[in-house]
Length: 183
Image 1 (cartoon, rainbow, N blue to C red):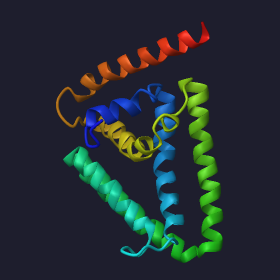
Image 2: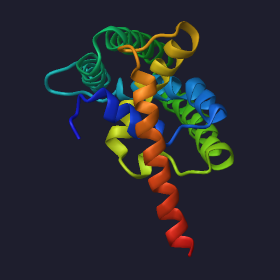
Image 3: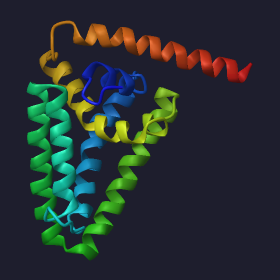
C-alpha cells in the first residue's frame, strides 16, 4: 500500500471502525493517547532533535500533509500543538509525576477503545493487523471523521462514498473469513 494513499489508509482503518459508538469513543480517546505519548517521549533524548516527542511529531505531521493537504495541514498543526502542550506539561510535572499521569491516561484511553471494539464493533482493533499503520492513521482518521460529521468536509467530492465502498468490501471479506473459521 502506498504510504500516502489517503483512500486506502482511511479505508483500512475505517473497516475496523464502522460502529458510530466505537467511532465516538475513538474521537474522545485517540488524541489523548497521542498527547500523553508525547509527554513521555519528551524525556527521551536523540542526537538530532531535543527529544523523541518532536521527532514523532514531525513524522506524524509530514505523514498527514503528505496524504491530504488541507486536513493534513490542520492535523499537523494539532500535532505541533500537542507537542508544545505535552512538552510544557512534562516540564512542569517532571519525569516522576509525568510517567504516572501518562500511565493512568493511557490505561483509561486504551481500555475505552478496546471496550469499544469488543462491545460495539465486535472486531479486534486495526493495530492487531498493522500496528504502524493503525498508530499513524488513528489521529487523522478521527480528525477527518469529525470534520466530515460537523462541517461536511471531504478531501474531494465523493471521498466518503468512494471509501465506503472499499470499507464495505473489506468488512464483507473479514466476515467471510470469520465465517469460514467458525465452520
